[in-house]
Length: 259
View (cartoon, helix red, strand yellow):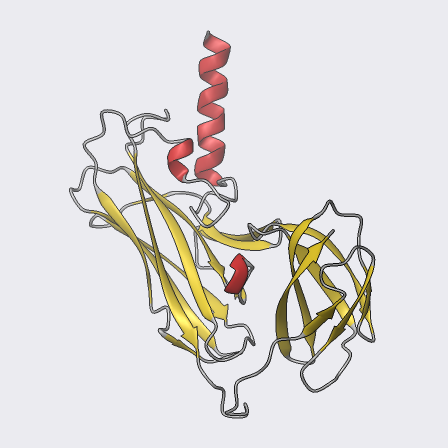
């Protein structure tokens, strides 16, 4: 029994210092509430991401602020985790230069910004900042942030805490150098297919570089090379996959079915 209590306390302290990734409530993920029970909790609060642009310019860098508010003043410590996803629930852009007591990390092709460690509230508010470079996606692409927050009572147990979640969106607008005409999606053939596939961009360019395969939930499942538009597909079970690749400074997403 004593060892169990000690182990549980160690686990909770570890999560307070470095929370496990994949707990933002984004598609295919769970919430912080899976580890933190709110049974008997009288705490209350909100989580938000301030300054996320409603209109997003490709390759522009924005300063985002995650705000954890303890609205009834009873919380001891604050924590959070967030991720930013684009079309088809894949990683959108890059987060860097996290502020004090926070960090970024990667898991299954998604990037996370989170507390490191949890902090004591100042006037019932905790804030963290990070730089986010917007991806070079086509105009009209919708980008969504997902955040989960913890208002903890500080008892070193997983009971009596409050968890809260929220999300928000922005839409990619035309960059100054971008053609006003809407871009057609890349062509993949054969689709459906089972082995080698070909990728062709709207201007008949055959890209080379890296291509990442995601499952339908947005989880990265494989990565391989694309050479002059030809991809020797990895060993994957039949299903629907999302392919992400770049050509120059542009990023593309396409859907492919394996039979």
